[in-house]
Image (cartoon, rainbow, N blue to C red; front, side):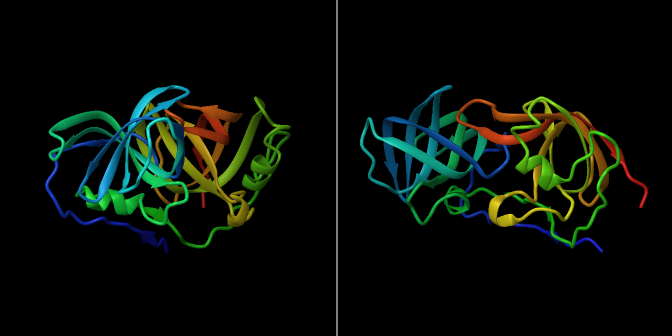
Length: 232
């Protein structure tokens, strides 16, 4: 039976409706162009290699011109800060590298409420068959050799985010690999839909060092994928 872990950050202040535009666990790096301090947190205007973006972290002392990295980040669009009386078309919430607080704590301080459902039940899915068949761990650990090559991977959908940058984002696991080196999970982008707990065959192209802009990049993922349900 599936076990779903719903992580809820409770509302502590009122904000205008906003839209989540990216999944968590990305990293954003850039040069600080401007800072704005308010009670409990600091806004940073950053210059990244893909252009400017705003970020919010727990209160910190950062000087203009400093190079910073924001970890465990999430992006929200159309976020209204009532304190600054400003609406940000896009803003990153996260933890400044080297800091012990931030990320979800920063979101809670802003009064956001989100749920990130994740299937945490035991996983053991048989490897796909055929010349292009690989396990999740094999795709991750052989990413360089498999770059721009087609693969087929069987796995269980443990996380699904729909309609982000025109794609559906799927995290797939099959029981192989290790969490310690992130070889137990592969990100898949697709136009197909899936439900948490679905066991599917993914057919797509392996991409390396994919950059989606605003500092969001991934070492390996499967793109242009189709999903086919496996009869259980």
